[in-house]
Length: 164
Ligand SMILES: Cc1cc2nc3c(=O)[nH]c(=O)nc-3n(C[C@H](O)[C@H](O)[C@H](O)COP(=O)(O)O)c2cc1C
Image (cartoon, rainbow, N blue to C red; front, side, top):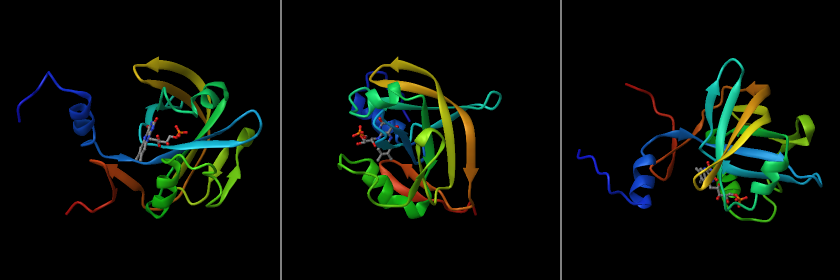
């Protein structure tokens, strides 16, 4: 395996895709009370004490102004039964929230039903990083359920397999 240093963004994207992740839908609410959300796999844990998590949003996203002005967001960690929801929130459909049960968490931020975990967060920082904005949130409340997670790797959705 030869290391290359003259890579283009397609090659970088391809190599980064080897890293297997879970899949989340990050949600918030705009100042008219309208829910906003998108599929994201840039979510990660950052700190246990204080409890911090991070994720990033592309600068060109129409959702960016809402996430920049909203004090709260929720990270909805998807289960494998929520594949269609993931596809929906990764598309540009008008009303992403019309299908699938959800409720309003703290501050009215949408919390999706049936997730493997939910982290309700207060935004503590945002920072431009290249073509994305990096958001850090402090976890205010969480829930978890023993449902198998939805995974993403090499451009495909996957399901958990056992190590033999
Ligand atoms: C598995 C998966 C993970 C994604 N992760 C991110 C992410 O971390 N950040 C991001 O900005 N877009 C990510 N996207 C793309 C957004 O979901 C997609 O661009 C969506 O339309 C964004 O919503 P918007 O139209 O409100 O910007 C991901 C898409 C998929 C399918």
